[in-house]
Structures are given as C-alpha cells and as structure tokens.
Image (cartoon, rainbow over all chains, first blue to last red; front, top):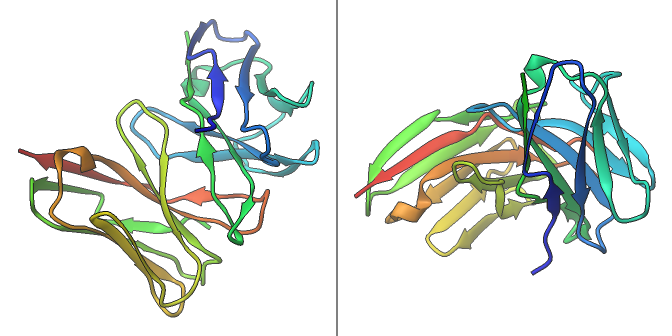
Length: 115
Length: 110
C-alpha cells in the first residue's frame, strides 16, 4: 500500500538552529500538508500546499516556517530559527480528490526536540 | 473552525460499548474520523459527507446528523486494539485547512 514517508524520524537541535524536515508524499497525490502535535495535545494544522504554492496556512505558520517542493517528489518543512516551543511531532500528509472529499494519509512523523 | 469532541477520555472494559461525539456550531462540509495510537500517526477510519449518513467499519460505525453539525462514532464490543485517541476532523475543499477536534482518549482494559 502506498505510504507517505518522512525523514528524519527524530531530530535533536539547539535553539536558534535551522531544521529541515522531509516528506515524500504518495506519488499521485496532489495536496500536501504539514501538521504538528505537541506531546499529549491535539493535531494542529500548519500549512497546505497545492500546485506548487501554499493554499492555506494557520497562525502557527509564521515567518520562521517555510515549505518547498524542490524536485517534484520531496515536500519539505523548514524552520529557520528553532525555539523551544517548536519541540513537537511533525506530521506530513497528502491527499487526492476522492469520493468528493479530502482524505488525508499521514506519514509516521518526525519528532523534533529543541534544546 | 475546530469541532468540539466529547468526552475527553473514556475507559472501558473489553466488550463494552462507547460513543464519541463531535459537534460544530456551523454545518460541516464533511466529517472524518481518525484514530491515533500512542507514538504513531493518525490513521483514517471513515468519512461522512451527507446529512443523515451512517457508515460502518467492522465494529466501528459513525453517523452524521441531518443538519451536518454533529457526528457520533460508535465502538461496539470494544477490543484492546481500539485503545487510542480518536479525532474527528472537518474537511472542506481540497487543499484547504483540514482541522482536527481536540481528541478523545479511549482506553480499553482487559
């Protein structure tokens, strides 16, 4: 079964450092997302991406965050200068038009720990 | 707009039933149910699109009321494997914000 793959599975970084989280969505999917989940809390929407541009972003997705699809397969989330509160599990998801609605397939997540 | 879920948490014995509710003050385009086990990604369970719709998945089923403002997830004769956090989500059009509810933690004990 096709799956969304994410790397790294766990990254530890110092506050202020740049981090890039990578995702390979399912190949025929057209919509891509990043979500984050702080330990024990809800899954929070960060950004959605379609046709090589951001289609929607939340208030969490400030100027420190950016997304790219550099080569037609990878979908990356960059955090320019990490803060302690960026520590969370980051999930990538992708979807395709199906049955008139948007069904997301999630990757296994990248755990980011900021020290 | 984030949907509201209730209860926040529920503890069951194997074989017992549970209902998890998801509601919104405005009509939803659709409602999705996901289950997340500890340390894992959310996994899609089912989607309901139409008011009055009911859908089943093994011993887990869901309904969507006529006004499309409330959905309930029914877990019948629960198994240990049902333990996890259940999220409802409201999906709109493609590529747009898909928002999850706060989650309901379900624990099934032997």
